Figure 1 (spheres, rainbow, N blue to C red):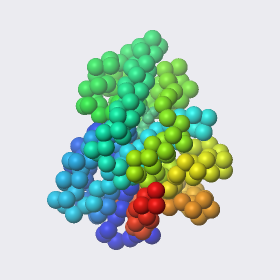
Figure 2 (figure 1 turned 90 degrees about the vertical axis):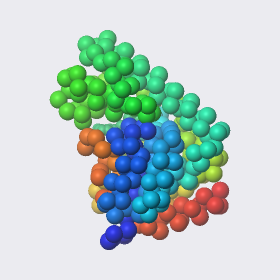
Figure 3 (figure 1 turned 135 degrees about the horizontal axis):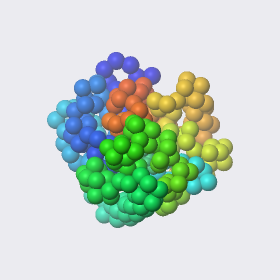
Length: 278
Ligand code: AMP
Ligand code: ZN
Ligand code: FE
Ligand code: FE
C-alpha cells in the first residue's frame, strides 16, 4: 500500500465533464495533496488532458490521459475507465463525440420530464453550469438545487433524478463489452470502475476479460475493507490489475478528496504492461 508523500489517484473528474475544477486547477490541487501520478478520467472526453498535462509537467505530476465510459444495462451501472488514450486520436474522438451527443439528448429529455412533472429547470441554465463540459446528471442536480426543488445537491440524486424516478431517463449507448473494446482498440488499458455498481460480476468479468479488460478498481472511497478484499480476490482470480482512485468531482458527497485513497504505485506499471501486450 502506498504511504508517504508519493500518492497515486487514477480516477478524477474536471469541469470538462461533471467535475467542478478546471483541469489545471485539479492538478494543482492533487499536487498539494502529494499526488505524483494521476489520471484525468472525464466522462466521454479527453479535452482536459493537454491543460492537465501541461500543469503536471510544471509541478512534477504525471498525468495519464483517461476517460470514463458509463454504461447502463441489465448488468447495472458498468463504468469503464480507459487509460493511456491519445487526445489526438481522431477516430477515438469521433466515438467520444457521439457519446457526448447521447449525453446531451438524455439530459434534454430529463429536463423536459422535470418540467412536465412540476420541477421546472431551464436547459440553458444546465448548460451554463456545465460550462461546455460533457453534460451529466450532476449539472441537472446543481440546477435543481439552485431552483429550490431539492434541499441539497445529493438529495437530487436520491429523489428527482434517481434511477426509476419519473424524470429519469436511462442511458443508451455502449454495452459493457463495447466500452472495453473501444478502449482497447484505441491502444488503451481498460479497467472496471467501482465494481460495486455492476451486477453479477461472476458472469460479467469473464465476458469483459474476453473483451480485453486489464484492471478492476479495488481501491475506492465507498468500499469497505471487506469489499476491497473481495475485489482484490476477484482481481487475482481473473488476472486483473487492481487499480484505484478517488472519483473526485469537487461537488456533493460522491467520491472523495483527490489523492486520499491508498492506491499501490505498482498498479500503474502493471497497467502499462497490459497495454503493451494489447
Ligand atoms: P450520469 O452519468 O449523468 O447518469 O450521472 C452520474 C454521474 O454522477 C457520475 O459521474 C457519478 O460520479 C455522479 N453521481 C452519481 N451519484 C451521485 C451522487 N449521489 N451525488 C453526486 N454525484 C453522483
Ligand atoms: Zn462523474
Ligand atoms: Fe463512475
Ligand atoms: Fe467517475
